Amino acid sequence: MGAFALGLLFNKNPALFDLSAKIYSGALFAVSTIFMLLAFTGLLDMAGGIFFLVGFAIYVVSICSAICDGILAPTLEGHAGGDIENVPLPVPRTDHQDLNVSLYPSVLQCHPTEGSPLLPTSPCTDPTSPQQTRTGYHALLVFVGSAAVVIAAYALAKSATSLATSFQISDTLIEVTLVSMLTTLPEKIIAIVNSWRNHTTIMTAATAGSNMFLLALCVGVVLVGGSQGDADADFKQPPDTGTRLLTDNLVAFEVWTVWTCSILLMVVAWTGGRRWLGGLLFGFYIAFIGVELSFFKR
Image (tube, rainbow, N blue to C red):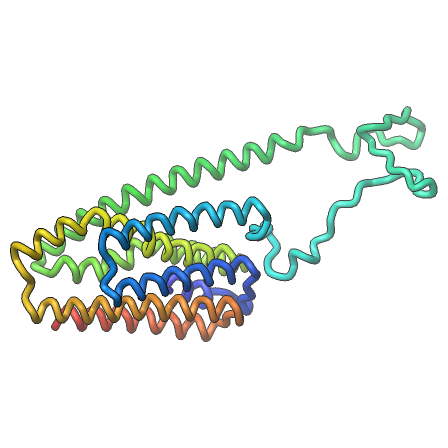
């Protein structure tokens, strides 16, 4: 929610969202609702983890199928919102309009006359070469950026643990403050850039997709891989009652926060966003971090 709030805050125009953004926000609301129901009914076990993994696979297949079928249409470069419908389609140049016959230069070659230009007006170039070069260039940038993010995440995790040990601070406190802010920094930058370019669909898709990745895939892997180990640890050494109560309260607060943020995202996607709304949501994000810090200090 912090990244989405910054996107609204840095948008110079009122943000309008298309059908694709509304679908993304609705999918996030459905996933967060299922996660909340499973969390409060005590079903976050191995079966719940398998359910989340299968659900994430279905989500990926559904999104890819919707994109291929044209249901989720990408935003055109340089055009956003309702301007896409006003983009004029290219009309082929025609000769002999009286006969309603289109004669393309590539089909009909006329002999030059005294009025013909010495140099061609449109040079014959391969139209696929620039597009292929541009696609390869962006694919290389995506690969390099992904590798840099992975390396930075590993270095951040190791450094945060070392800092917590050196300053005798709780690892959880470092993860909630420093690690959580820095790991979501690329997402915040993406949201700001796309909002400045008025690409609200990409901003919404990035926000919803990252949260669904955490709620479905990451939670599923943790539940499937760690359920047996947690059960053995609890059997050998049961947790203290006060610590368990604090942990339960904190988890319940975070679950409610995730569900509330999904509702806010869906409401903004359906009604539109303003700068003041982005500032309000970012204030809620800062308040959320402050509440978690107060929990851990207690």
